[in-house]
Length: 398
Ligand SMILES: *Cc1c(COP(=O)(O)O)cnc(C)c1O
Image (cartoon, rainbow, N blue to C red; front, side, top):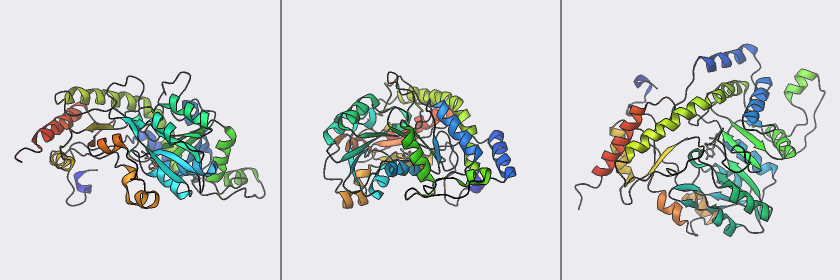
């Protein structure tokens, strides 16, 4: 956005939280779709699915209209419903809990491992599994792999499905022995192409699954569970269709799929830039050791989707964010803990059981700007502004 586009009263950011690269290649790909006049899921979407699957070492994939749609189709295809439980991390975006609740099942909130590993704790998952548990959702926070080996083992022992919420983590090696890419280690992998994600189609998502029959079930539910698609009928003169379940319309458009094909190709260079920026951040933040940097000890692959830090205990986050805002640095919080949202407290009494790590870290979490259009100098500016804000906050008070 330019200054002229900013709504009145909004600050003009020097460093924005997230941004994406939309260049001549994206514009050409979208223009080609518009010229073809076939705008709903068709050939371009099928190509996008095949290319995304191949990049992840998966046999096939299903493109959908959002990451939330992907999670919802996973729950529907598994037949999750009333009486079932799904174990989800509280420290995540609300979507995985929401699709569980919408299915009539109970989201059971699990803690994360530790302040330097904000992914679901496999030991806690084992404690929470009951005969009602149908699935466990692992979310790869900021693109760092969750502990999939231990989670898959627990899931297998108890006959529970492992769903990967890989919204932060396209094209990331899992680091598990023979495990392949994130999204393909568990039974179902769900990706998001929302505007702030590492690759974007504006709105969009993708599904991969180990079991081809399950993937085809999700493909069918994506489009009203019709036995043939409009594309098939238009192309091949297939006469009619049957309906094999209660489905939805979660199809992407050809416009978004065209964007996705180009964006997928940008991920390697995007990744390299993000990795360098994270290194710049870590070097600059080392000047204030009271600021925690989760995942700093990880050496494996990561999407580096977010630059999350932990403020020193007791430093008021609102004050720090206000300081950063006046320095032109946009920040966010990933995430407020789901188990403390009013709906989940009311409907599931989700605040009854303590989640000590989540409750300790979530008031301290802060996300700094990170995207592939940023410069190293901007990362240092944001880090220095944070250090100054932390040192200033609380000064002048008894
Ligand atoms: C973005 C996101 C989602 C939802 O994806 P949408 O495409 O916005 O529906 C789900 N889970 C996580 C962890 C996310 O970051």
